[in-house]
Length: 410
RNA sequence: GUGGGAUUAGCUCAGUUGGUUAGAGCACUGGUUUGUGGUGCCGGGGGUCGCGAGUUCGAAUCUCGUAUCCUACCCCA
Image (tube, rainbow, N blue to C red; front, side, top):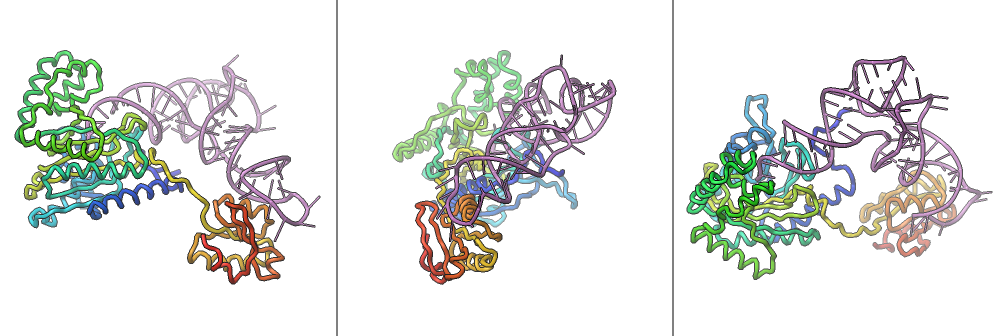
């Protein structure tokens, strides 16, 4: 038997599909209300795009991208995230030169060549938004509001963690200070941290080793080293969130692995889905457009992992819907099929092709969760009527067939 | 990439030192004497026990390999 590849799932379960579309309906509706419009970019891009945006520093490029050489000998890569493609499209269309504000949302599959675990697949889905051309910190707050709106509508509880990563003025200096701090405790920290010192020093801050964490209590905090501009923006952001009653917690260990991020970084986490607890994350990336050959353009965005969210969604209760039609006499089957066909113009309607007794029809109607069970037996056949039972309130009536389509409205 | 656990019917799982035709519940399906469901009763179909080797007279059961799933780590865009 041929099976799907590791970490790649089908969506064929009806409930799963319903959850998926329920999420998308809500998320896209919110994004549109915020004035964002849909963008779709290719699943496959030049590997160089992701190498440039991600940098060569971590495991990402070598180990965790779905990269291969195609038949034309092009080095290509299935997109591991959405931002790089959107920025590429933005620059390619020369919107950076056109100026103005451009706001997009997207959703679709992403691919990462990783070992699967809870909340982590090789093919997974993200919903995200990107905003270009707005440097104001109000936009940062609006991003967070958008995520809050989506999660609220989905009935998902969360904790919001917030940090500022500084910018070119303050980040490099902080990085130097942090490295010299690490060197002062280097012989006591774990192997991973010793490696991180060289590859990505800021990552030591969220090391899971308790011993390391206690050593890092005295580590310099970026939040105390922000330059005036970053500090003002961060204060303003906190005030906007306070004014709008959005709870957050400053997490000075919240970092991003990549160089292009600056200033605002935020993450929404859930305590109910295992160690991969981030359900949405975002931040400002004022440098990325320039990294990808565009004119420097302020930008900010977020992305949410759809599979992780689906686990947490509280679905509205399902009520009975539509019609079930059945015949109790072979000779009525044709009539049933025709009536169903007409009924489907306006309502969901299903019918059985076999004559059965009433009890079995009721069972079948119940099984597909129909609201009405409609049956034609010998009596109804002779009288040109159809018997209809509302399965919710259990009321019954026999009506003329020609009235069947008008008189009953769900 | 590293570590731990798992893999038996569509689903959730039993299967007691290796021993005849591998079981249950749910689901599906048929009937229930000729018109009332979701909640009665009786029956039926469905499994080369993940895959491949090995040990053995004999393997779902033991050994090795391999794949996949779950889970944590690394990493996290």
